[in-house]
Length: 295
Ligand code: R5P
Image 1 (cartoon, rainbow, N blue to C red):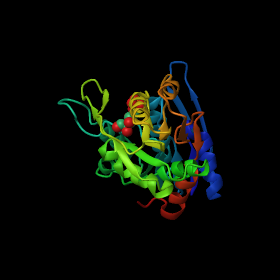
Image 2 (tube, rainbow, N blue to C red; image 1 turned 90 degrees about the vertical axis):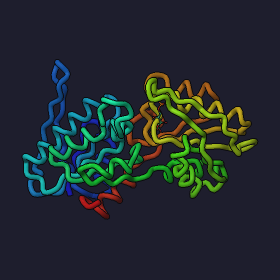
Image 3 (spheres, rainbow, N blue to C red; image 1 turned 90 degrees about the horizontal axis):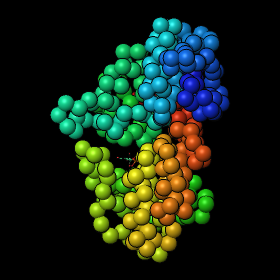
């Protein structure tokens, strides 16, 4: 297998290749003065299984175009198989037409990847794996939740209560509880489909006097997590910590969450940030070595 670390995942891509002890083909990349992306493979990929490592955090559109250029180039250079390793899968939240006339964005992105020769997508805690799995390219969705929970366990939070956002997120809390063992529950949320704003429903939580870790897939503006932390605090938790897989951290999201009473915020390196202290490289390396281009 050949690992190709893309412009958005240089560090992670090299880490994965190192764990796999596989060859790297570097990418020469630059941005033209008008903003367009330039991509060039600095080596042969012909007749090889190729893993393109390119997360699609902000700026999402630029990172997606780079990924499409990489995939189509690998296809033209006659790669045997092309796996797109996309730890953070942009546009996955627009996973249906919520309102008449809306784009089904995630479907469009998967169609483009398929056209460019991608035979498999490997991602981490995608927003809606069930929907991704129904699209044209086989998707393997890995979970970094146990790794995040282990991080808190190592910091002495064994027995902490694991919370997730929304009823649909309960499985995430249960997964974290498999490591922390202090019980799980969810903070009830409701999203306004027009404004996108999330409301917290005042559902009581079993957190009085407890250490709590709130798990979520994404922190973007931080609006959802701010409200979740504030509500958990109001329920008299002893300490509240936050774990997210994809720390997009738009603007001052981190400060806003801390101001609401979170003691710490931790993320993974699916998207590089200064809170990306948990690495998804071992998770991805293991999936690539055991299943490769197969689902
Ligand atoms: C929502 O469905 C996700 O799981 C996150 O809770 C949400 O995307 C976070 O967005 P923001 O940080 O902008 O509230």
